[in-house]
Image (cartoon, rainbow, N blue to C red):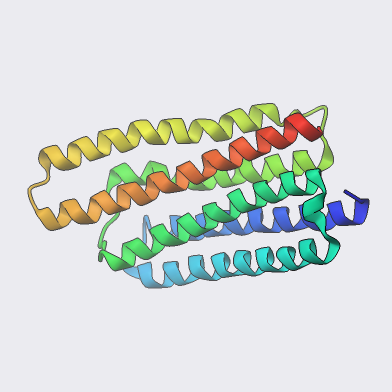
Length: 206
């Protein structure tokens, strides 16, 4: 990939990663201000739509420059798709708070929502290291740490689902919170895909 093309592609990746972080920061407001959920969701959606626009612009660039014929460009594009999927899943979760009329965030969701932001910050750090081919501060540690968010989320998901079906008696509440828990887990699955695609790029191109 030529220098100018590499700059454009990585700038797009960085922009989408930073929009992901903004989504997470906005969504975290729902912990303390659930009554303001509609406005929180609007902010999350606005960031996600900007990420969509960035990806569309990148797709045009790839077509114009025929970058899909370049193996490094394809590898970076897979990372971009994975990060953009995180923005999609976060938007879906935010919409679920409105769809299911969630009037208070349960304590067992707070850790996950805060971990979204931690994982987004890790993603931003990681993509900068990949762009700069940072040999001193190896991205391997960041890749492993990003992957660990999914492992912890799986444990929490199992605990939450068990408690939900063991203790909750209201079928409506069961339906609502099962959906919320699954949407939370889907975000961490998306982060896992970011970790996988970053690891593959790092092995091939660093």
